[in-house]
Length: 629
Figure 1 (tube, helix red, strand yellow):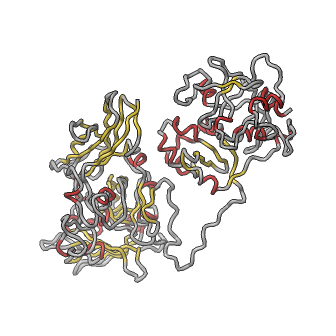
Figure 2 (cartoon, rainbow, N blue to C red):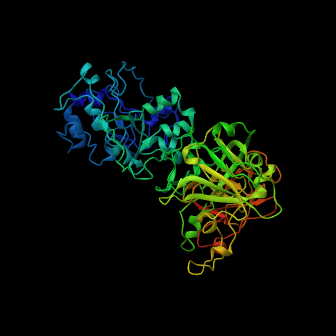
Figure 3 (tube, rainbow, N blue to C red):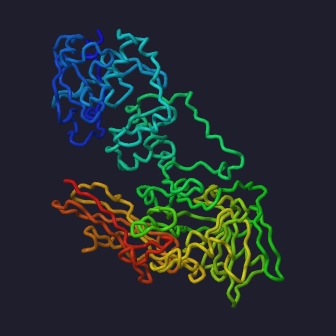
């Protein structure tokens, strides 16, 4: 009875069937065809396609053929006899053991609407439909499980409706994190195998892969348009089970003395360069998705554990000028200063350090192209606060020194400084920021108050600000005096003298390609190339040149984003180029370089700007991709 039910009554969903409903199908399947390129015939079971990709597919009964028997299923597969739930051979590594589609040109039959079922349970099905819990090469196994009991006998009606969904642990889900291992994701307590949808994802396969092996919620919070009924309906087609409620994994027990025990939870899309202290960057395909970087994926550069600060008791100490008055400012006190808002790009001095590592070893985190992000910041102008403490512009050299609340085990706090002239210049727009993209600063980004110094290296934008003072010398902090400085390629760790080099303040002109990714495959015809460009000191980016032949010929990219004010171009420009790829081209060597309004341009290679700390890496960015017809 199992074989008869299976051969004549089972309908699986397949990408071809999605064509019939106006939804995208797999490449190579014509819209409305309802079938895949390869079709094989199974006696007693109608036409079916060998499921070479492990895709869910549709098995339909042959017109006017007698009900199949268990013997007919055995005769079609030989060694499949007496396999019970594995009649079709699924679960034994046979990708072609799944079912297939109707014969070419044959429209699929309408499915009877299923009766309502509890969330997460197997829906009870009428005689024309059984929906599998799985969409991988083990589809047959699970479909059969839906119509048989544990001993191989058939189970129909209300009993089938009461079967529990298959349960998975989070560890099992995490192990399915690539097309090779299959792509599983979760939403709430439900588990989905979306492997066959990866290439169909309208936003691109690479973005969906970011969620592989984990929850969709963090990504849907970035792209809220996903949370719509028709998208949830499409996702439901890929459901394979639910998370085991007993698999609530407790966080690892950390000793109370662990300084990183209270670090905040981070977005799973971030590419982690170090866990303690936490340093991470967004993947390139998300970096330029928006002009303003969403807070959860803004690159994170921490030197020490993230402090936990009570906003009600927080005080910012501002040392007064001689004859002036020192200030102890609460958040409410800062709110009383005129609120100023600006869009500013922050970039780590080590952005793109990984490219220098390919020339010669350097010391530092292996940042790729993502140690840069842009936000809309709001807060009090530093010049207003300093003026209230009695400070004025001086004729002699002076520096504004900042100390954070983050400190090492010895109590040494992170510190940095900028010239007083910049801090006191209203046109420099230096902020004591308490908002980021319209929200209070996230903990990783300096809650409750941080310094934002437009056009200056990220290292001077001190987070969790505790103290501001004006000194005759720059900060004595290690990160000001013994780090974040550039040197000749000839200088090594045996000969370096940090006192001989000035501290990095303004950064050089920079650009990078974010799409396509290095090593990607693109189709011939037209290729879309995207990236970002920025220059320090408020210098505007006036042009981005792009080459697809390694620099032999160039095309000018289209610049997007906010218009940049002269000498106050604090934020990046997103750029894009649609380039034609010759049909005979087998590969592309894509290169980009930016030019700012002082006509500074990026150097063509890394070797001449190599330095032992791997900072100031701004050579032409290069991406190599393969071309397929």
